[in-house]
Amino acid sequence: MVPKLKPGTPGFVSNPHSKQPARFAQFSSTAKDYCSGRTERKSVKAAIYARVSTTDQNCELQLTALREYITRQGWENAGEYVDTGWSGAKASRPELNRLMDDAGERKFDLVICWKLDRFGRSLLNCKTALQQLQSNGVRFIATSQNIDTDESNPAARFLLHMLMAAAEFERELIRERAQAGLKRYGQDYRAGKVGKEVHSRSGKDLPPGRPKRVFDRQRVAELRSQGHSYRQIATALDLGEGTVRRVLRAKPVATAPRQNHTAGIL
Image 1 (cartoon, helix red, strand yellow):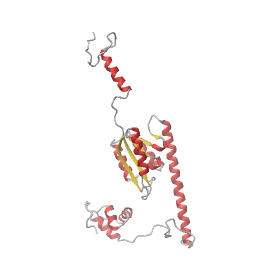
Image 2 (cartoon, helix red, strand yellow; image 1 turned 45 degrees about the horizontal axis):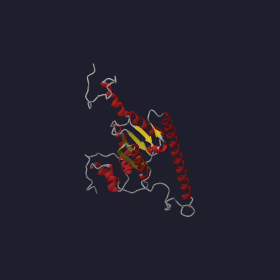
Image 3 (cartoon, helix red, strand yellow; image 1 turned 180 degrees about the horizontal axis):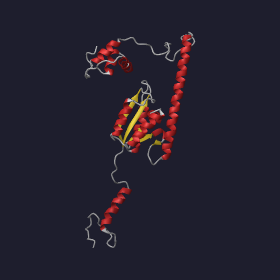
Image 4 (cartoon, helix red, strand yellow; image 1 turned 135 degrees about the horizontal axis):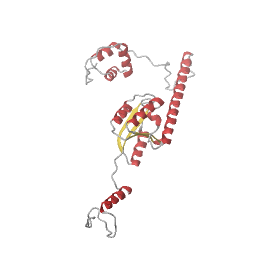
């Protein structure tokens, strides 16, 4: 026999002639709340990734569009990862690496990017990164191209593979044109046309190729043996970090415990 309940008691049925058991009345109320959207939903955490290829560009246009997208969706901004001056063909980028590490720790639920080519231009590298995100349960969205790696959207995943192939093809075309332009400039320079009939894009009319830097290679080895990092050595000698690494690879040196200060390098 169903016990009688007083008004205001959870499970009370207002209609005395109703044969609905009291235990189902409370369930019905909960179902109505769920259908009407009154139940609390877990906040979705979205991470933003943006990239530009040169240091004279900025990501503000991308970031503004992505922030507005997160606001419209009602998601939580879990952080912004911005690579400035890094090519999309490189698989290893500082902020991209940090993004992938945080994805492995599930610090966010999804990654949003303005366009797929901002995430990567190499088909192999881009596919590998997206598979790693998927294995960690992290969703990827390219907002301006309607790309979504959600399992329930096979059409978007098909479009994703098509655009990855197109991005790599575009990168190869740019690389081919750049190499052709450098070759033509070298021919004009050797023919004596540069500075007269032909001018470089910068207007400096420099010789083709990178200018060679004269520096003390032994000093690089000495600073490394004292325990300074590659970046500290590059800053102290006004060199590129890549140049420092190449010098040390050609001439291995014994390294001391790394120091945390930069004072007194010179």
